[in-house]
Length: 204
Ligand code: AMP
Image 1: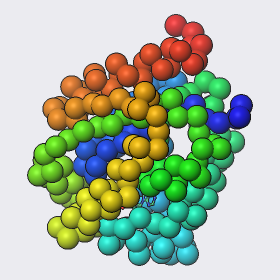
Image 2 (image 1 turned 60 degrees about the horizontal axis):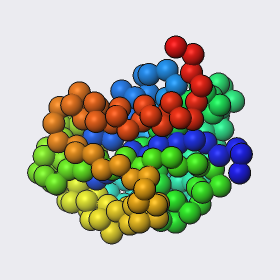
Image 3 (image 1 turned 30 degrees about the vertical axis):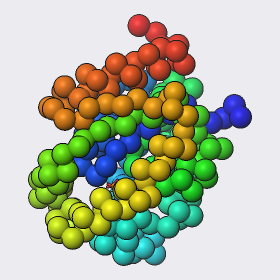
């Protein structure tokens, strides 16, 4: 399957820091960051898909797989056509997708997953605090309500966590997500730089 995107997945519970790490990484030449939640949030909320997104996300639920995968594929295609993402030069850094085993299965034809970066944070209170701060800063209704946050964690444990079992153990990197963004980023770089070196020829 020669046309699969070479990718690393940022994986972890809500509030573990996937978005923060992904955004920093995406600023570095040769990395392209795409957060599924950001793509959803950029939709026209009066469109059918926008309304569907609001309906699920406001309860902390996942948007149905078929809609999600279709939207993701269309977005990747658009990014490629616009040359924002160059699959031959850029390592794709995905955040927030796949979110369950069915999505992981549906994406096997599109993705060559080289590493899964599991951002581990055992302190749920710290993650909830991060989410509340983010809710205020980014005006995210899904992270403002305690019950919705709780449900997001439940969905993570029940549906998303099993995705780790879908991929071979050998490609999973366990990373401590506690600490400052810079400290965590240092750990992330130790994993992704060798992947980039091994799979892309980048001029110095
Ligand atoms: P996030 O910004 O990744 O926390 O995503 C915010 C919300 O968008 C989630 O709670 C879901 O409702 C929806 N969402 C994001 N990514 C996915 C996905 N891969 N599958 C289903 N729903 C998603």
